[in-house]
Image (cartoon, rainbow over the protein chains, first blue to last red):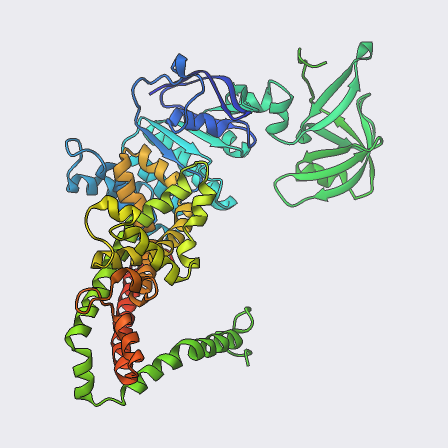
Length: 330
Length: 275
């Protein structure tokens, strides 16, 4: 099922959570709503879920007429703590009116099938308090899937989990999505999560959509300063263009080169302040002549060749930089 | 002492806190209650049986127990509604109403008894409107016991309701549950342990209540005479042994009741994994 949001605005008191948002999600797509807290991403998700109402409902904001069956996964699981894992998953089927409620045997079959899917078959009789965070979230997902939703909505589903579990679960979610092809919207403030899992990313800020695109598009061709900054670390240079106008130049740390000699006019003299060599890339923090802090990332081989030491005088040159021309800037 | 003890924890003062707890409970609760039983032994067994199975005594047990049970049950229902309203419904004067709930705690019980009698007697504001007698009947006793038990239920339920995760209700709604289903299948079971606690507190308070009841009950032998009153009557006649005999019966009954309620509560808590 496709989802279409047209001209949705929402305020809480004086705070505008969403300002005239338009969004289309194709059937079977996995879209991530990415943004800092307060950007309106959760509000948008809750409006799509029907948990919140848009301010001006006149336009009929959400496309699927009638009530689509929605599966919703909450950040803090929201499991029914007095029910076993089995009963939690069965809940959506058990509360159906008699006419459409499956038989007990059918419910059992469906729940067991979902338990296999989330790889928790052996824990059907446990209570949520006896599960780990990752297991709880998988139960929450199975519970949402039990009613065979047309749309799956995930509100920061991995936000409360530790890094290792989070990484495992997001890969598992992607795999699951590739198997069942359900239209899915995922809310997250974690750019790595969005970049890794989503087909398309919707970057949000202050109630507006800043950019919509594939992970590659938003990462390599950010539409504006906000998207560039939000999707990874950046170095900001203030450059003076012809005509005396000041330009803000953005360079990603891995697009910076360190050398012992100046390589071009845009090379900057800097002193090495810190070196983090643990990790896939070596991260070097430098201070430029005019006191700016610069971040540079390089492969270990390059680091070995350069032989950098803290306190060394070097030259930093950008390999690739971005300048954004915004009509609304002064 | 703690070294080499495999139960040693970083939390200090285990011996001290346990010592204080046991000493305090002994001095205030256990020793006086044991003394009650010791005093009872002044009576011969047949005499004891005669006193505690006396017609008036048995009638008072039934009345006390019945009214306390009815009052605690009524409080469980009405208290839940009030607690829910105070937590979930925004309305002007909520703070004020919230404070009013505590009044039965604060008022001297005799004051509440006199006030309730005045209001529920045949000429009282509410008594007039009802058209059937409340004061000086078992119903009146129930009114008094309900009054003094209300804060127990409200105050134990309020934090539990505040703790409810709104996400759980939303989850139930999204999964297709109606408001009624959400309430009975999701909210009520989550509140049950607190409700049982509140019920137990209101019930045990009602069993022992004296001050507010004696005015509104009228104290007619066999009809509206509660056990605590019977005990006081015996004391006034210097029949200390008789008073302690009745006291021992009431104490045993209360203890058994509270113990079984605790068992039920422990069982529900274990089931819901709330510890």
